[in-house]
Each structure stands twice: as structure tokens, then as C-alpha cells.
Image 1 (cartoon, rainbow, N blue to C red):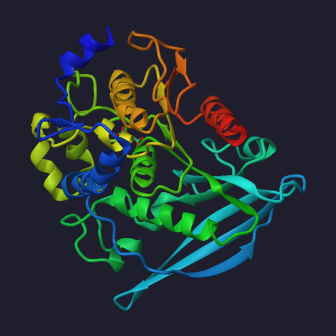
Image 2: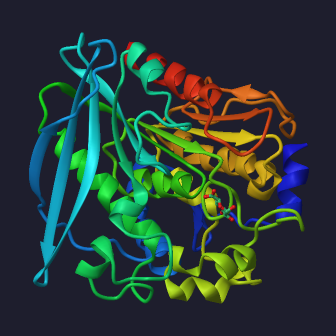
Image 3: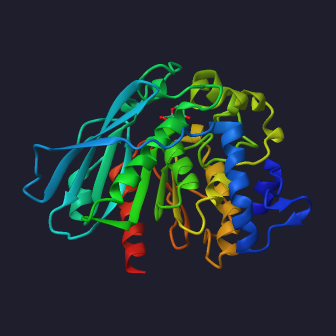
Length: 357
Ligand code: GCU
């Protein structure tokens, strides 16, 4: 049943290079840098060079019944005579000497907000390091504001997703300096366009133990090939959001079969760490079947490491299916496009499981 659906999608075997299947973890590790570059040069664009930001720490106001330590951390980046500051909110459970943390790439600056049930996350023993993505740079075609203004080549060399991702990795750099953080247990989470960003970040940056990709859809976890009329294609996404990508990605408009990869290969770059791909039943735009097949196909990379990828039934997913036992997880909850409490509960329970290993 899955095979039939895959045949319709016509996805080449991208684990086969020049007629030879990648057949060991070593061969895969050698291929990874090339594959990363391919995604950057063809789709997202290259991330700017790493700059050490200067850092300022201020105490936050609220304490959530005295359960939370809240600090606002300001990161100031300087380059080419310009500077830009981005704030991120670090909230840690007071009762933990070393807390596992979610880096949250947020649609909202406020804490908590409709996508971030903060108290519940803290009560489960996790810290949150949250930033509002448009503080990094605006979500439009203006490459002259925020961090975008510090680096040349916006559009030609890199798109906005790369820049949001760049900042998420700088937060990880910072967490590594904090004793109250369990730096081997840092997850990254994002929803929708920020799910795309979370996935790219973890594909490039191997320090995240868990990657939570919520309803990322087109140019996120979902396959680009074989879309239906109701799904978001490369034409549709680049009609509205061309600036998310490098300009050269436009050559794949209505030309998906020319892509030298499909999105499951981006998921594969997360191996052997754990990824959870969340879908919502009514979110047809995001192509849930394509997200499921991507989880399924990417699993080969985990198998190369002797780990289990997606553990699922041999059928296409229906509403309510949850495949959370492997290191590639997929679930399809009821309802529409949203980062809900239910989604957080899935990500938290997987994180709990990882901490017990
Ligand atoms: C639009 C866009 C999607 C994106 C979503 C979001 O619907 O077409 O690709 O994921 O916005 O970020 O909310």
C-alpha cells in the first residue's frame, strides 16, 4: 500500500549515488556534507558566516508561581559597520539543576502565547529558549533589515529561512555556555514556516537531540514530488514567499522532477538523532501523505546507523494515527493547522522517552 503511493510520486532513490546504494553509516557520513551543500545551493541558500554576538542578560518580570527563572538574553551582532540586536527569552524550571530545553522558533514574541503553553512545558521539567522570528529579520522580501542588513547577497545567496535558522543555531551556541542547561538534551521546535526552519536547522546542526517539525508542509518535511491540486506546490509557495528561498530555487517551479533531492533527504540529515513530524488532518495544504512518505523514506538513513526509523503499519495514515516508537516519528492529529497543546504533549512525551534512554 505504501509502495503503491510511492510509485505514484515518482521519487528517485536518492540514497543511490552513481548507481551504487549508500550501504553503510560511514558512506552516509561521507555523503552528508555534499547533501547539505546541495540543499543550501539549490533551495535555502547558504547561512552567513558565524559571528560571535555580544550578550546582555536581564531578569524577566514574571516567575510563574516562583517555579521559573526567566532571563531575557540580548544578542548583538556586528558586521560591516552595522549592528543588530535580537532578544530571546530563557525560561528554566527552578527545581532542576540541569534542565533539558526546547529552543522555540516563535510566531509570537509574548510568553506564553497560543502556540507556547509555557507553564505546562515547565511543569514537565523542560526549559524553553524562545525567540520571535521577525526580530531576526522581517518575513518579506526586504533584505535590508535586522540581521539581513549585516550580510550581503540576500535572495541571491540566501533566503529568509536560512537566516532564521542561523539565529536558532546561535541560541544553541549560547546554551552550551550555561551550566543550568543539559546541553546534550536540547530540542528544537517550530510550526509551519518555522517547522521548515526547525528542520533545516537540525539538518545542518547536529547538536539537537530532538527535532519537532510541526505541520511544516511544502519545502519542509513534505515531499515536493507528486502533489495534488489541493497541496502547496513549489509554484504556489514561491508565488507568495519567494524570499524564503535562494532565487535559484525558482528553476524548480513546475519542474519538481529536476530536483537533485526530495525533502525526505533533508529529514535524513537529522539521523541518527530523533525527529517527530506532526500533521493535522485538515491541513491538506501541507500534504500529510507527503509528510508521512517522507518520514518513511528518510528512515533508511537511521537504518544505516542500526537504528529504527519510522515504525508504522503498511498503509497510508488516517486521522489519529500515531507512530511514535522509532527515531523517526509521525502522527496525524485531528483538527486544523495549529501548534496545539496536543502537539506539545506528543513532543514532550518523546523527549521524556529520550531522557530515560
Ligand atoms: C502559508 C504557506 C505555508 C506555511 C504557512 C505558515 O500557508 O503557504 O508554506 O507553512 O503559511 O507558515 O503558516
